[in-house]
Image 1: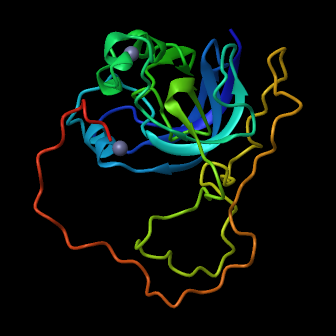
Image 2: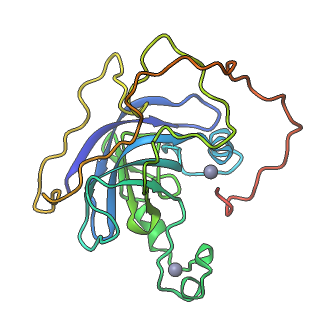
Length: 242
Ligand SMILES: [Zn+2]
Ligand SMILES: [Zn+2]
């Protein structure tokens, strides 16, 4: 089995800070897609797991609301090809079981996707459990093709929802794309993936990052401030991970 070394944010224990360390991710097998992470949101669900409100095998790598560029595809993948920009979803329905065929994908009865979470990531030579099929706080993600959604049009990895506050002006130029690619002081180059027989299709589209290239102008919008704290609510059930 061929493994690729990358950096990721490891959560060893609920309630403790995550640490950036080397981990290994395996190459994609049938129906799987390897994605270079570009953007990751921090969801309340992640925080519930980080605090231990929902038990999960540790260590693991949190993050499940992500976008990136397809790096490599396994056999049988037809939905995307290397170079495609995609969103990643933690719901990966099989599309073939009874609930899926009746349009209730969220109730997919295929448990094999959960099994695949057990052998995708390795830390210090031992397998660690992938977090709900994604583990996005890492340089690379390995997911089922049913969990990727192509990003069409000119949507940027840096896009924000209408009405959301503009980022505060910065005196430093904004790196193109991602925190995951931002060089760490102790960093080495991003993990290089050796070519194989299933390596990228020569006709594959190049990464088409639609991030604006013009120099950013300082915005007149005042810097964003966190909203006033709200009364705490009961966490959502683990089955509604979104
Ligand atoms: Zn299904
Ligand atoms: Zn979420």
